[in-house]
Each structure stands twice: as structure tokens, then as C-alpha cells.
Image (tube, rainbow, N blue to C red):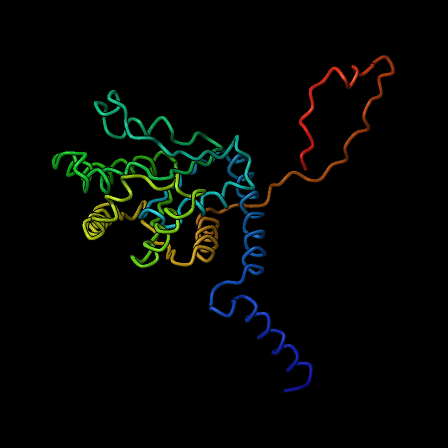
Length: 281
């Protein structure tokens, strides 16, 4: 091997090493660099979705503190909110409880040219509602029967449906939940329901297994995101979304900003007549 080849190999090894810190986790610098690239591609994807009138629905499910919210935040950060919505519904009202189960979700489905992200979805029925006894056994069984058909209908209607399950180990989930409890800035994320759910860890595992058995269908399969390492999970999930939707770069070309017109007859009102925010910083 020549001198130049050795240097290339060395540079390659150093570059590979820089991906990870001394704990074997993705380094902050590498993560931020890759995230910036992926977010740039997400912008291209959104332009394509709008240009072609696509309907994109992305479902995020998983245990509490599995990392769904952080991933959703990184997806939506660079996107135009007029074409990308996050849906995170509260518990159903009395009226909604008497509707057809899927009805409250139908109102939030994407229109042409729109990306919609469900931070939890109709799969509440297969998870928390079933485990915590918020629905009857008949309602649960009917959901398992009708959900695959409902999703097939969505796909046949032209909706691109992607479903992600964020998988976190019990040890890592416990660490994150304890962190939420101890940190006042994160405590709002923790609800009494989270505490009850934690106590039923095994029951939720069984419910997830049954949910996959019935709803992991060819037209709308489940994709599992290993999320013990948040940064890696975010990058992997975003990269997968980009790989699942064919898109081309239709980003508008740069243009020159026209000169601002000067109106000599315009006189700005006195500054003293306006209320300004105090410059504390």
C-alpha cells in the first residue's frame, strides 16, 4: 500500500471514529451534521408532496418516553407548518365516545399536498384503552378486525401510510421516566396514566404483540425503531421516511429580491408613541 493510500485509509478510519464518542454513542458533531442533511432532504420532500398533491400520513406509536416526540420535533423543525401538521388528540369527549371509533381521526387525515403526523393514533384502542380497561372486550376485538380494512381503504384512496413503533428497553424507559420526574422542565410530560402504564409493563408488551399480529399488513406494515439511543433513532427514522417516498428536488430556484420602493410622502410615527419590549438582554 502506497503512502497516499495509507493516508486515505487513516483519514477514513479517523472519520469513522469521529462518528462515535468514547461511550460508543453517536457524537454530537456527527449527529448535528447528519441531521442537517436529512432535514434538508425533508424540505425537498415537502416541496415534492405539495407539487404532486400527495397525501402522507405518518403514525408514531411506542411506550411512554420512547422518543417519539423528539423525533417528530426534528422532522417538523425545517418544514412549512402550512403543509405539515402534528395531530396529538386529547382523550375523547362524551360525543366522540359515541361515534364510530375512527370518526374522530378521519377529520385529521391529510389533504392533497399535505403531510400529517399522528403522535399516537387510533392504535390507542389496541394499547392503553385495552390494557387500562377503557374499552370493552367487544370494542377491542372489533378494532383488531376493522383496523386493517380501514388502513387498506386509506392506502387504496392514495394515502401514503407509514407506521413507526419506537422500541425502548425497560431499563432505558425507567431512566427516562425518572429523569422526567426529577426535572421540573420535563415534569409536564409525566401524567398519572404514565405511572399506571409503567406498572403494567408486561401487559402493554402483550398488547403490542397482539396489535402487530393483526395490523402488520402488507399494505401498511409496522416499522420498528430501536430507540434506546435517541440521536440514532431520530436519524434512522428520518432516513427511512425519506427512503419510503420517491421524490425529486423541485425546490424553487433562487431569485433576486427586487429593490424596495421609496415613498417620499410616508412619514413614520414618533418612536415615543410606541411600546417597546424592555431590552433585558
